[in-house]
Image (cartoon, rainbow, N blue to C red):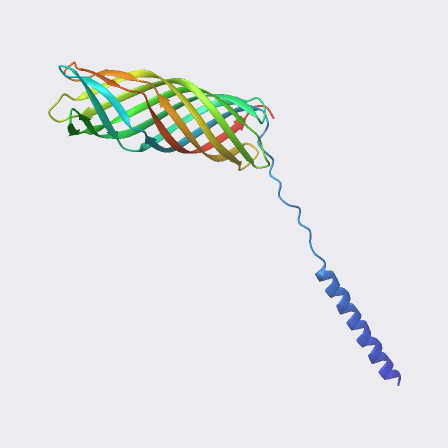
Amino acid sequence: MLFKKICFAGTALIFSSGMAIGADFAQPVYIEPFEPAPLPPAGFYASLHAGYVMPEDVDGEIELGGTTGIDVEVEDGYRIGGSVGYDFNSMIGVEAEVSYSATDVDSISGGGVTFNTSGDARILTLMGNVIVGNQYDRWRPYVGIGAGAAHVNIDVTVPVIDDLDDSDWAFAAQAMAGVDFSLTDTVSLGARYRYIHIGSTDYTDGGDDPVSIDSFGTHNIEAVLKVKFGEY
């Protein structure tokens, strides 16, 4: 009889111990969620961008014993550049930007004749921009506008008529919209769209004939890397 009581008590002890251990294992473990620090609200920054350029239709005129309207067929190209700026807070900042883009020129049409060409158009832009946005946790959507100057260089070989290798400065303006994603407290990666307006330009071809290109625009899709430093 005593042996049965001892066995019963031992069984009960083991069962209750197992329940207690099981209860300990069943307790959920709370893990503190990762909260990355947002980009500092104010301070200097530098950024790099690269992307895809889609020019609009390019028209102009050439003087060959009379004024002849021309259409310039331009392929899509690429764009690279960088900027340095200052964010006054998370909502507004200013920056100075330099960018370079290049596109191939396929053909020039005028007077009912199309000439296939080989060569390219290269554009260097110098802009001052104002950026307006806001920080939402790790995301910062923004819009911006800018104005400055563009140096447009056209270097094309045209069969039958004289080649064109000349450059000119023009007024330039742009508008953009994008979003940045904070990778760390000082580094962000983003994407944006920008539209650039290039004013009219004037050139002289190899035969000293005046050539003018009307104002045109380009659509640009870009990736942006931004690094902040300075005030925190």
